[in-house]
Each structure stands twice: as C-alpha cells, then as structure tokens.
Image 1 (cartoon, rainbow, N blue to C red):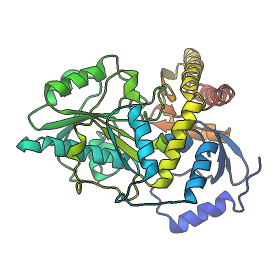
Image 2: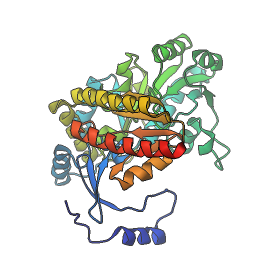
Image 3: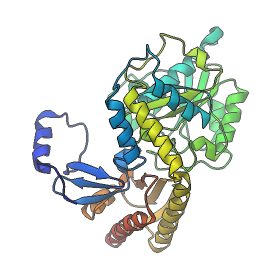
Image 4: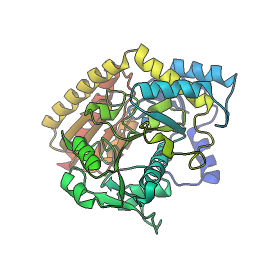
Length: 405
C-alpha cells in the first residue's frame, strides 16, 4: 500500500537535524502510517512491527474502535481539569479496578505513575511519625526518566552526570529474597519491582519469588509496589502481570498499552491506602483527560469483545515454539523467555545488529540489555504475522551465527 506522505524521509531528517534536540538515537526512516501490526515509511516501504510504539500500541497501529472513540470524544470535550467530574474517567477507573482492586489515579506516563506511587509510599510511611521513606528496588530494573524514577532504576549507566541522586533508594539483586530481607530496616517504606523486568531483558521471576517479597513486606510493615508499565493491560495474558502469580501488591502502576498508544498512565492502590494521597499532595494536569479515557475504555472493550486474552496464549506458544526450535539450531541463542506477548531471546553476542538487519528485511524489533532481542508484539497479532516475523528474525540470526563462526 502506497504512503500518503508528501515528504521524503530525508526531508524530515534534515528538519530534525535543524530543530530537534538529538537526545534519541534514531534510525534513518520516517514512519508515516500504520495499520494493525504493519507500518509504512515515507517511501512506501511496509514493515511488520514486532515492537509497536515501544509496547504502547498494544492493539497495533490505529485500532478501529479506539480511533472511533477518539474521534467521537474530540467532538465533545478534549480536555478538562480534575476540578470537575469526568464521566469517562470514572468509567475507565471502574473497568480497571473491577479487574484488579482498589482505587485509581490517572496521569500521563509510566514515569509519572511511578512518581505517584513513590510519593504515596512515602506519605504512608511518614504517618504517625514512623519516618519510613526508603524504597528497595532491583538491579537491572527500569522505572522511568524523571529524577526519582531514574534513581529508582538500579542501573548505573542511567545515573551518569545526574548526581547527586535522590536519597532513599537502596538496590537489591534480582531473585534473591535473603538480600531483600537484609536491606529492610525501620526506615523502609516499600519494595518496588517489575513483576517481569522488561528493559532489563524480559527476566521472568522464579516461582515463589513475588510471593516471598509479599511476605517480607507484610512481616516488616512496608508496602509492595508492582511496576506494571510493561506487563499491564493484558500484555502477559492476564489483565495484569501480578495475576500470573496470584500475588497482589499494595500499589500497581501502569502506562504503555493502557490506552492503546494514547499518552496515559495510572496507578491503583488499595482502599486502605487511597486516603493517604490527600488533596494538594499530588496532581497531574492532563491526567485522566477525556480523550485518553475514551481511548482506554475502547481499548478494554476491544480486548474483551475480540477475545484477545485467548489470542495471547496461542501466539505466545507459537513464539516459544519457533524460538526454542531455533535455539536448538543456533548456539548463539542462550535462552528464550516468553510470558504472553513479552518475548526475550538472549544471545551470546551483541543484539543491537539484529535490529538493523531485521529492519532492512522489513521487520521492526528491539535490542535491550546488550545481548537480548526483545519483542512486544500487538496482542491481536495473527498466526501468519508471527510466522512471517519469526522467519525474518531466524534468517538474521542464522546470518549472524555464521559470521560469529
């Protein structure tokens, strides 16, 4: 299908070079249109997108029901401040909480959601002069780009040049319950963890690990916070990742796929905690705006009406089968990790070259943590598209295995 773009990729790149701060490493392509799991560049080339919107476009590009909801809402109200009741915000909050727990707060991003959770944990921890403010996070985790969430991210590469960092964060190795227990003291307010580490390489916890963290938190009177910015909104095959292990946190943060690509974030907390976020202590000007909330409601309805939770299970099994078979063939594949539509293929060599080689062949993938090929496909991806994309990734990895000797 031809692109409707009137400018070339090079024209757009030249404009960026002149006017946009170059803080992103960008590929020399201007994407101009998307439909489902495909996108097109300005020159009309089509790509199969295995990483749509960095995981935000959970229903692929321009899902029809979400597009219609946005169009309809834009004719009524685009923005309202939270000094008024917003009908769609209440509806979306009920949909989220009835499928999880508690009460919801809306914002604009995963970093904002985690900031809010951190503030709530400290507000709760400082009640009754308890002076609990420390938060334990985990090596190779990722929680956002604000100063607090960057500090919470226990990866030194993200801290360079930003010191002094925010006080109160302490880091534990992933997977070691004893290490967490040893870090707990009378000033610990919360434990903050991704149920599955995304940017850290699609690291899936061992059975019993999240339950062990729940027990440590309960035994020591501190909170358990799950950062579900990536795992939320059905990504793992259940509405939220915590439901995979039946371990409920006190606070649950989310963003990315929440509104199928429209900027939005949220956190949910227990009914007991909700009053601690009292008026004046936290806010988000654009959070919960009518446009995003309409998109969120349409996203949840699409997932249920189209039976996409079942599709996730089937496609996850398909990805696992394809990549585990490839791992038996290629020694450069050291591990395959799949949980729903979160796929990590760990290599014994650098994974970044995979991105460019796949892009040249018409597939978009991601490389993370130095040696992991990461896929976050749309949850409505088809079996045919899975095979098409896996064929391209396999071709690239075979070529790289040959080059590696």
